[in-house]
Image 1 (cartoon, rainbow, N blue to C red):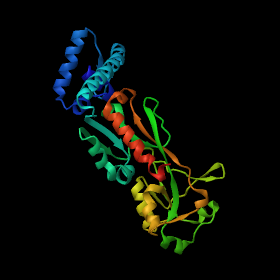
Image 2 (cartoon, rainbow, N blue to C red):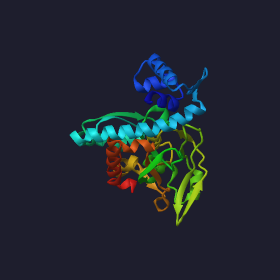
Image 3 (tube, rainbow, N blue to C red):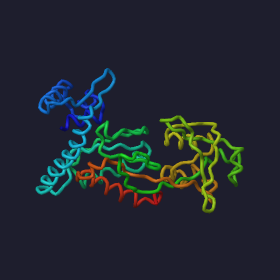
Image 4 (cartoon, rainbow, N blue to C red):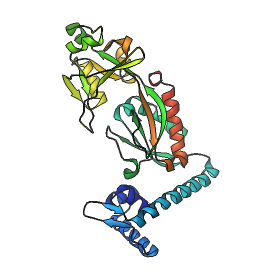
Length: 296
């Protein structure tokens, strides 16, 4: 059942074999034995992908329920002896959050849960949790995947800032309207290629600005580096630039109209929350972000 379910989620025998750490031949043979046992064709194979038959769809739905119950029972029995979460935990997260928030405190998680083996996927792309066998993921922005559970863990604050050298050369904007005369470093989506609008909270309203970029980047850390290099004004997560602001390497502008905060969520498949290792990580990141003023 585990092999079959992973093939359906990955839409590939090879990817399923890779995430299960099995030879592809073993995965193929397992499905053949399963179809023979059930006397039903479960998967349709083409040169490009694998998809379940109608019978396979129904069997997959039941497999997911059964496997979740089996995992929950197994974990519960393990905890009777140790009362500690354990096993391999696969987590996906954006690079900036990983480097600036999670990784500096990761030793605390390891000390609290030494029997959890961590596999961290750090990138700016949006990973497919089911297809890639990922247990949970940190995401910034409004959750859009209705197949996943989103647990809110904070609100990321943003600031608009620039280097002192840039402001000395080009002047300090006193209003949103004055941005039209400045160089802007703009973040664009690595997935869609679309530049993100700048926004500001004015009173009780969010005002969006169609930011015309002189430099565009698709990496949050690169965005900050461009600001430090004097390339122009940037909008960045407050957590990324707080040390630079404190030491004068960057200067905040338009502080009276800061950008709107964005939600940070821990995403996971509904069946995964039963695993103590996922619950432990979820509680740890909730406390981690809850104690950080730049996420409240």
